[in-house]
Amino acid sequence: MQQERLIRKYSNRRLYDTGGSRHVTLEDLRQLIVAGEKIKVIDDKSGEDLTRSVLLQIISEQEQFGLPVLGSELLEMIIRFYGGPMQALLSRYLEQAFTTMLRQQEAMQSEMSKALQTPFAPLTELARKNMEMWEQMQAATRNAFGAPSATTAASAATAATAATAATAPGPQSSQGAKPAKAANRNTDKTQNNPKKGK
Figure (tube, rainbow, N blue to C red):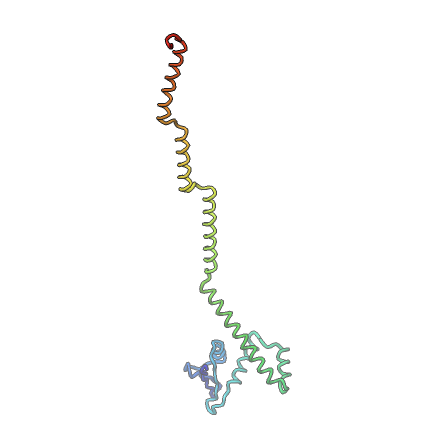
């Protein structure tokens, strides 16, 4: 349980913060409460607990000189609950409602603090995804319109070499052509000189 900060109220109506060793005003106490401090105000002579009356004074000053929270209609409804059978229920309901609101406020402030600590995290993630998409597009473009791969080039070179070898005459075919031409010349001579052929 959080320790209460003891405030003493003197007969001259001045308030003294025993924890901070200084005199304080109602506004100082309000700032302590807003910061999460729990205060306890006692009368310096009698020791009477004056916490509730001092808190009401703080609320009264805020409602009168600050931005009011309790409108006239709300105050009228609260007044109607006094002395009735639902007064205790109203007190518990308001306490639970304010506790829930404070928890939601703390959670929202925590999320905002995280967002402010890393404000460029979403932008960084978006830039990374855009870069990945750009690299994928470049790779697809190279595959579709770029230079052929090493395997494709090697296959094309092999096919070209095979086609060249098939069309070029080799040494054996050249030697075989000479005896054929010689035989044709002998046949022509025999036909021109029949006697010599007999």
